[in-house]
Image 1 (spheres, rainbow, N blue to C red):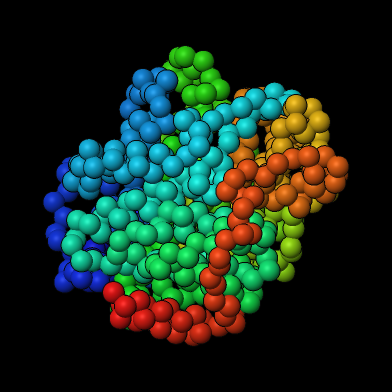
Image 2: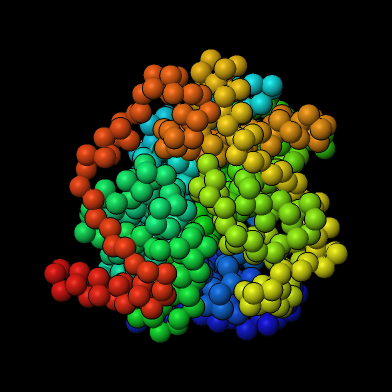
Length: 517
C-alpha cells in the first residue's frame, strides 16, 4: 500500500503500448514530476507513461507526486500573453525537458489551438449582475472539452511517433460532449483506434450527430442501451481487465486521463488575468477570483483546484450541479450515495458517479492511498461513500456547492437573454450562472465571479427554445457546421448494456481494421 511519507516500491509500466517490448528507463531531471495511483498500486510513472496508461492498474486515478508552484511574480509576467504561450508556461511546470522537449511541446500546443474559432481561444465576457463568463466553446465541437481533447489528441500522436510502429486503442465514455470532442481530437490520428460509448437516447440530437457523422476509419461509436454511468462502468471494467488492457494497449480519453486535467488548469489562469488589473496577483493581499463551475464528472472544477494549489489567487470554487445532485449532497450534507439518474435539460451533467472526485478525496485525505482505496472499494461494492468527519471538513473547506433545477435553468437563460443584449446561455452554462447569482445574493463571495460557459447554446437548441419561446428561438440561427450535421452520413453500432458484448465488439473491430491495413 502507498502511504504518505513512506518509502515506496515502484511498479513500472511495461509492454503497455503495442509495438514496444518495454519502456525505456527514465533519466529524470531533479525537478521531474512523477505520477502515482490514488489507490497505492503504482508510483514513479513518468508523464508519458501516465498519459498513455490513463487509469491506474489498481483502478485508481493517476495524480502527480507533487503539485508544482507557480514561480513568484510569474502570473504578472504572464499578463498579456496569448493563450498558447500561457499554456506552454503552465504545462511546462509539469512537463520537463526530460518528458517532452519544450520546442516539441510548443508545437503540440500550437497545433491544438489552431483549430479554435476565437484567437483568444477561451475569451472572457462581462455578463449581468457583475458576473463574468469564460467562454470555453470556441473549439471544433463547440464544447469546453475541446480545450483538453485537442491537446490530448496531438499529445497522443506525438508520443506514439517517438516510438515508431506503436499503437493504442482509446476507449472512452461520454454523456455527450466528451465523445464528440474526443472524436474530433483523434480522427485520422496515426496509431490510434478510438471507441466512444454513449447512452442511447440520452444525449442531445446535435451531440449525437457530432459523434456519428465522423466516419473516419479509426473512429468507432457505440450507442449503449443504458445510462452514462453504465458507459463509464464498462470503460473502467475494460481497463481493469489486465489481459485485455495489455493486448489492446488501452488508453483513456475521459477526464480520468491526467493530461485533460492539466490542459484545463490553463484557462483558470487565463481568466484570472482577464478580470484583474496589473499587479493584482502580487503580495499577501493579492486579488482573488471565484469560479462557478457546472459540474458532472468533477474534472473541470478539479482543474481549478489544482490551479489554486499551484498558487493562483482563487477565493471560492463553486460546484454547480443539476438535479443529479450527488456532489451537492456531499458538500452540503456529507451524503455521497447513489440515486437514479434523472434526465434533465443539461444531459452532460446527468451523472451520479463522478470519476474525478476520487482524485480530490485522495488529496483531501492527506494523499493516503490506503484509506482512499478502502473508501472506494466499499462504494464500488454498492455501499455509500462515508467520509470521516475530518475528510468531509477538509473537502468543505475547499469547495462549496449549489443545486439548480430545470425550472431555474430555463429562467436563467431567459433572464440573461433579456438583460444581456440577447446573449444566450446553454443549459449547462446557465447552471453555473444561476449558482453564482445564488452565492452572491447570499453574501457567499465578494470577489470577482467567473462562470464557466461549457457549450454553445446551439448544441441544446431544444432547451433554449423552451426558455425563450418558439418565436424568439426560431429567429436564432444555428452556426455551421452544426446546422448541416443532419445532412451527413453516419455510422454507429448499437449494443446492449453488456461489458462482454462491448469487449467482443472492440476485438472484432480492431481485428478487421488490422486485416485491412
